[in-house]
Structure formats: structure tokens, C-alpha cells
Length: 276
Image (cartoon, rainbow, N blue to C red; front, side):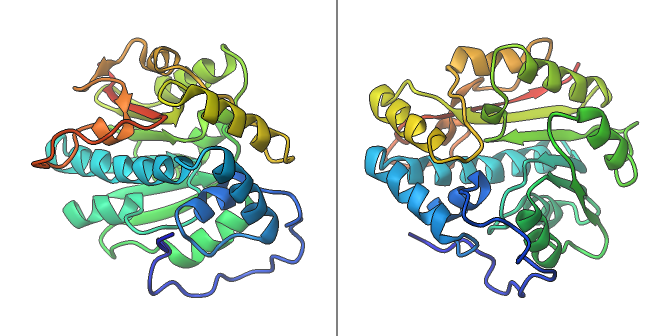
């Protein structure tokens, strides 16, 4: 695998000794899929088990990361969005949200949100932005959107458009009502002209393999993950204006030009929408 850890990343501050690293963690497993080094043996074991059942998961992880970079680049360059609320940050990797946004608009403000102490340790050490802009971090749970918004308001101007990013995290909210409710509460807190970015796992391209691998993952003790259909993912955008091409497999959301044509689909679907 390719190591996507930032090349000049310093050692994180703080003490990880109080963290139970015997239990797999989704952010660290995802980091392992991306070829990163910020994971423990339990994460790698769970990752290898997933890969054995569904080898395409590593491609899903890369596709999700590439979608994130293209979407932020689009919002910064085409829609002139200067504020980003990235919830479920995960481990730092190349082309993090602030890096992409601040290349285009150095004054951009970015707030990262996660509730994994290891993620926060690494993020605070590695994710430093342009001096003209602002990068901040919140220790919060997606299930408490009011707390996220309240703390984000210390960095973001919530009277101005914000891109709310929920990439690969809504699958950790089970059921059909809680996750849409959380998304709605977040979007109710940002003004007209704001954007919602969502990506999550599906089981439509290789349904048997990805479903079996997800069952295996959920049996490891890590935070369970619920696959959703593209139609279920599309419901997160109810009341918003979907940006073309709508809800699609991640590699097919505004891909970079390629003479070979459209990239292959993977079981990671995504979309971007604007709040009227």
C-alpha cells in the first residue's frame, strides 16, 4: 500500500498509553487501508480480515480520499467557499481538507471534528494550515450535532456559507431515522449557500463480498458500520440542490479528464449539494 501520511509529519504530542489499542478503530483501519502508519496490530488484523473478504476496500478508501480532494477543490475554486466543517476527520493524510482549500484560498477556515483521542493527538500535531487562515479541532461526537455547531462557531462565521463534510462516517449511525435527523440539524445551523458533502459505503457493485466483509468488521468489536443504498444516501440531501452529477460512485464524481473514459465504480457513493 502507498503511505499517505504527510511526509514531514512530526511525532504527535501527548500520551497514547491510556488508549486501549487492543480494540480495532475505524479511523485507524481506514488509515491502514490508505497505507498509513498510524495504526496498531489490532487495526491491521481487522483490516487484513476485511481485505481477505473484500479486497476492493482499499480502492474504496482511495476513491473516497480522492473525492474529498476534488470536492473541496471544486467548492473553493468554483463556488468560493471559504469555511469547512469536516466531521469524522480520521487520521491525517496527504491532501487534507485545509491543504486543498488553502492552496486556493489561503484565508480559508477549517474545523476538524472527531471523538477518537488518537486521531486528535495526530491531527493537532500534523494538520497546520496557511498563516492567513485558521485550522481548529473539536473533540465531539456526531451524535451531538448541537455541541459540534456550538464549538465550531468559535472558529467559523455561521452567518456565512459553510461546507459540512460527512465522509465515511454516517454509516456508524444505525437505523433509518437518526442519521438523517443529525444531517438535518447540522444543515439547519448553517446559512443559505452552504454545502453538504456525504460519502458512505454501499453494497451495489459487489454486494455479496462487501456485505460479508462488513459483517466480519462488525464482529471485531470496532464501532459497527451500516451499509446504505445510493437511494438512502440520496435522502441525506432532501431539501438541498444536488450538484451534478448527483449521487454517484466516488470515482465518478467530477473525475479528472482521462482518455480511457470514466473510472470503474466502487462501493463508495457520494454527493455534494447546496442549501437554497
